[in-house]
Length: 249
Image 1 (cartoon, rainbow, N blue to C red):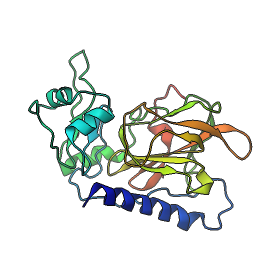
Image 2 (image 1 turned 90 degrees about the horizontal axis):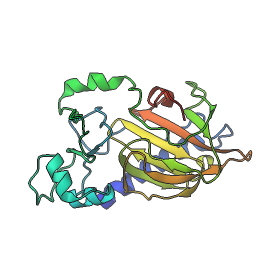
Image 3 (image 1 turned 120 degrees about the vertical axis):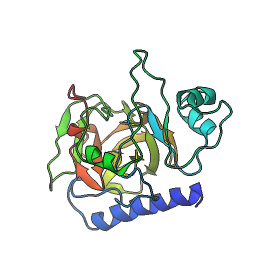
């Protein structure tokens, strides 16, 4: 399977999922709208294990130099941090790599084990795994069955940040209710979506680092500068506040 085919397939699933639900929809943009199929894009034994901040799960077609470039690192540094030969270029799909330097304190966060038993720990939200995509007040909270995410207020043009390391699987304006929308897949269980941007600064297939600017805040139909932020775990909407630091946006 080529990387181009996989990206095209992911985009089709996203648009199809949105289209089915939004047909004739008159509710608010963030209400009752699944934004991605829960079906994994490829078989994996990593299952539902989230990738910790500072790590990246390899996608088909990735190379070590390409990943290093995407995260602003040197290939030799990634090789060192991951115990690989200095001249390594080939990496395998599903492999979890450290893309940030180990903490100076010496404590090292290890990537998730490639075992089914690790899935149980990933079944519950993990406070602080995600970063706030925008600094601002929560204008609308998560309500199961009524809203699928939260609305964060800001100023038009403010930077929108990636909540975690991952790969962009959708970036476009093809889903009217969400406006210019970015969807990032972090692993086979966790996905985030950022709607109502004014400008998109990434494209489909891009690898993004946690905290990287991916867009700019837009203004909704009521003239309110804000973004719509959703988190999906195993295809189901979950409360983003359960995954974000408690310090607030």
